[in-house]
Image (cartoon, rainbow, N blue to C red; front, side):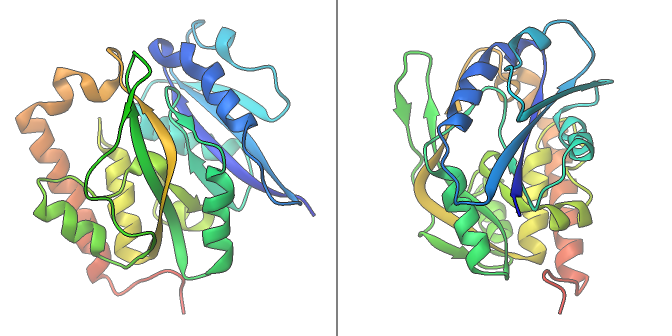
Length: 251
């Protein structure tokens, strides 16, 4: 029986031109026998600007919807594909060879691991890359570790939410991504870590594109008042989950 990994991508018009590169990085992935990937591209809006960049591939599904932000687009994309696991891939980023196989191996080997992340390199317009100091050790991430680090380090996690690979049932149980204008992926990461163990791969799994149009580079993203409100609700949700007594997998 073929088993499937769902690749979920939220896209808007400015980032659509990067979709072919993201597709090439998916085509370079090698999976164990009996596994396949299916890419769901969800436009955050209904324009004519994205479709021309969507690859002609039977493994790709393209959908559109009213704009609500990337978290809404990713969550609604889950309606269009079935699979055991969900991998996040932003439209302007690229997976490195071997990423999906490593993520899959970590979760298939240990049913107590609910999600996986990996090392990231920033990719700049000139093609150069740069890593981040302070990556955790390769291996399991225990419950609560991400929240504790995030709180102690100026609301910056030691693992990158853009690299998440998640069990679909766990993702749905938590309601998908948070309904925030930004940091919705950080909110999901902290929620996941509040209820389940994770995994970090020290192998580079993602090239995170730095460019003038990315949402995290806009002034609104670092507005002090809004950022404070986002961080407050992200932390409150994570702490509420941690204190609820519920954990995954349910015993």
